Length: 291
Image (cartoon, rainbow, N blue to C red):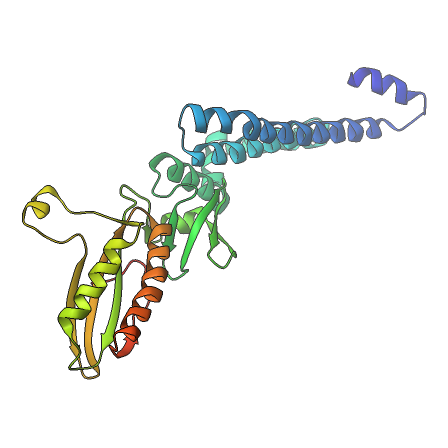
């Protein structure tokens, strides 16, 4: 095809260097088309088949899409550059003089390749996956939205995107709320004035927490046999301002824990007001709560 285009353009008496430029431009255009097609193929074929039928992790399809596109772009631009004789001679002299192995080692020392390697490690060892809720150092909570060959994109609960290089993410301390066990233990706490009816407070908190449809029974067989309650309610502190009472509620996942937290705060405050129990301080949200 390139020969036909070249013969057709020769009729215009163009300089030979123009043919090289046109050939390189065609390679670049084909590269963009193939890369775009590969991403569409992963989205339309691999994701439905791999994730729904074979139950593959969406992290794999996301990273495969990005890795395939990057490889196509890299090979395409190398082919375009190599199609120009002057650039081809430069590449040959560079690799012949420094040695292929030395060139690879030199590239491996660069930050971009380090990000690619760490991205592969993330996909292989899966400390995080797409759709996991995580906390990274001091960056706060967020949902893993995408893992590319260079960086990971985290969507915060304020709908902001946090872009972290894979190398930095691999070296960070990560709290993953979906790894191994998705269940969340939520603390719901209130501080009551001294002299409050403690037993009645415990009864109300346990009653409302047990009724919540998203609260689950996380007790072991031994704990059930011992007669331990589904919802533990404890007086965890005697403060100058009052008594600190905590209900421990288990839920299936992070999203349910948030809903339970908000619902119980609303319901319990209404119950305490209705029964004339005075609150000093409602609980402070902690995710995950600390003992």
